Amino acid sequence: MTFREINSKMVEATVLPGQRLFSQRGAMLAYKGDVTFTPNIQGGQGGVMSMLGRRVSGEATPLMTVEGSGTVFFGHGGHHIHVIHLTGDTLYVEADRLLAFEGTLRQGTMFMGSQGGVMGLVRGQVTGQGLFTTTLQGQGGVAVMAHGGVFELPISPDRPVHVDPQAYVAHHGDVRNRLSTALGWREMVGRGSGEAFQLELSGSGTVYVQASEEKL
Image (cartoon, rainbow, N blue to C red):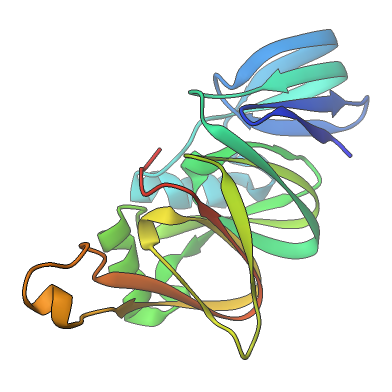
């Protein structure tokens, strides 16, 4: 296990010879051992096309490659950190929420319209998350950031999950998403909470939700 949660806002990562980690630049708090940090210009394991996709959309997040032998402590901005372990499936997560991930995972970029069609595009505009999202596929650990901590909600074919788009962090599994409206009598008379849109996730998998509606 590469990542170990030290507390709610810091993780410890074990770096071994011949292996590598990727992290958000500026996320290293301290380290022990013979460890090197190198700016990454190829967008992780996804290569140049992954990087170009994000730069075209104006959503690139600078990464650094971590290699060597030792222990590194990561944290950023005092945000809460949650570790997700992938076992061959794909994680969909916004790039600015990625703190660090193992080099065994392949990074890619997915156009939001390919999940949910036009509504996927609307979701990107409404949530401010943009039209692209990052994908991480394979086996390995991912440390993501959130406000107020993260809780996991299982998604099953007979039990879709509805999430406030501002509280959405990530999801994985065979999941479809679409933006739905929650317009009721309270919204009609102007007394609603303002949550007129919901992100509906259906299929089989898990969605990660933060205990806040605040953006990073």
